[in-house]
Image (tube, rainbow, N blue to C red; front, side):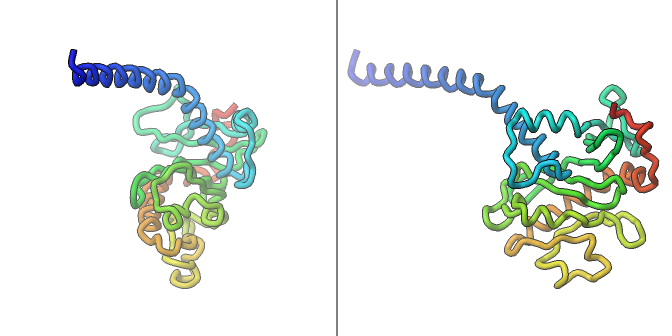
Length: 239
């Protein structure tokens, strides 16, 4: 066999061996990757309702235990009724409830919307009054670091706390990202429905604002149920 033939055969053998090794490594790491993703999502839900702060780094076990005790993930149908997995029907939406014993504190909805460079995924928590935001987190995005990427920073996310998804008349209004500071370009009566924007990231703010409106409109029936105080704990399948 010529030197060229031996070189080609060697290259093929190396490629095959490397391929098997990479496949084996990927398969072996998949359970760990899935566990890390699950823990990260649980941590973000807990952060959205204030059970974990931005500067805390609890263990995976601590996150799982706190999540199990305080978060109940169910579904909501088109009428805003909370249903279990077994009761789930086509078109129902996922929702997580933050409970403290028999008290229902907040509800958490997943955020999955387009950004400037890719999908933005996170969680938005709303108080049991169906109107007041209690937290916002982002666990995945592709926005530009230092610009749109600031959506993952605590300074930006904490601006959502206390903001409203309804106007002064109690009607749905969503939450939006201002272009700059809220006080500089937003009418005073609309200020509760806006958070400060990110300098140099106007398009990220527009995309996120549009996503919030679409998602919150989908969840408006359950928000109305909370505003009317119709979701009495005894009628919720959370036990």
